[in-house]
Image 1 (cartoon, helix red, strand yellow):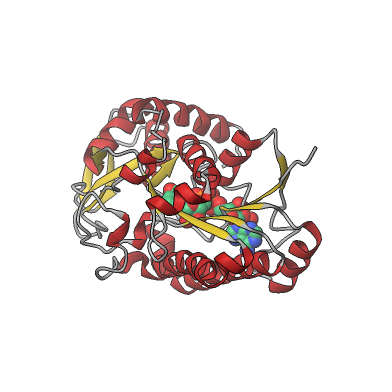
Image 2 (cartoon, protein in one colour):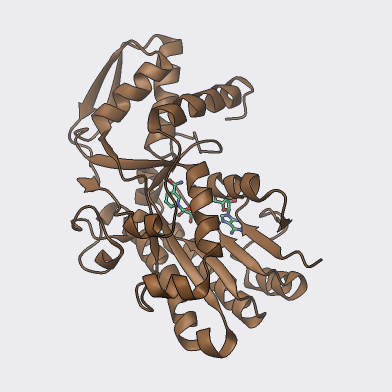
Length: 322
Ligand SMILES: NC(=O)c1ccc[n+]([C@@H]2O[C@H](COP(=O)([O-])OP(=O)(O)OC[C@H]3O[C@@H](n4cnc5c(N)ncnc54)[C@H](OP(=O)(O)O)[C@@H]3O)[C@@H](O)[C@H]2O)c1
């Protein structure tokens, strides 16, 4: 019986490993960077020629939080552009018809109309803190769309993109120089609890609102989008606006999030905010009507997801794996 070959690029990352958990019974092709550096054109060419997967989930990327994107802008734009170009072009050359590219909600303008619908893309200036990363991600979406536009009919290709909101869950990066807000808060509160630090200072005003989604919900959404019939997908999207937002639909301020994690961790000190540090965009909530129309809704509530994530964190922390 034909069993399609599914390549998960970035399978050791947070989203990639969630996809592996969901798709573990399928015929997966998994290669770590040691065996396949996706920024190396020759290696990618050779890999696709040999393996010819039927589907690709593009969860490999140079990622990081505000600290890394501010300090390493060249790496963020270059690495992401080259990984995307290598995968999409070589997939096309080898007749691979299905790709799911993972963008990021930072592609939307800093002051986009909230909740942010897919058609807000390119309607205004981006947030300067991660502009190089956002530009690379926009290029990835447009790369998929352009190949569809030029070769969709002649070669039957169908390359899609999803735009996840902020994700959290198992496999997150707890390195404080690279981490996003949830893993960073979890680690800082945990260490402050152990060291009995009386006060924690957080960046910004704490007033920005953010949306979060558990990575297992995200993986389900990716699989759903990958498997929607072409006709149905086309009916709900446009040729030049084909990306799909994936969000929980609920938001929380950074102050509220910090108190929630503080309570989960059991830290009893004080939280203060350094208002001189940047806040990032004031509000970022994705409009998730389109993905809901495709029959997906998130299952994991933030508090439950955070409780489980803290267990994962402690497991890694005490085994000295982070
Ligand atoms: N996490 C979020 O909150 C979030 C939110 C929105 C969008 N996204 C998007 O979702 C995707 C996955 O995110 P994630 O959080 O899972 O990222 P992640 O945990 O950093 O995982 C990225 C994976 O890509 C691999 N990779 C990077 N460069 C590579 C290269 N040159 N060759 C081979 N492998 C390479 C990394 O391998 P190494 O382990 O060797 O570095 C890692 O396994 C990204 O496109 C990201 O932009 C994530």
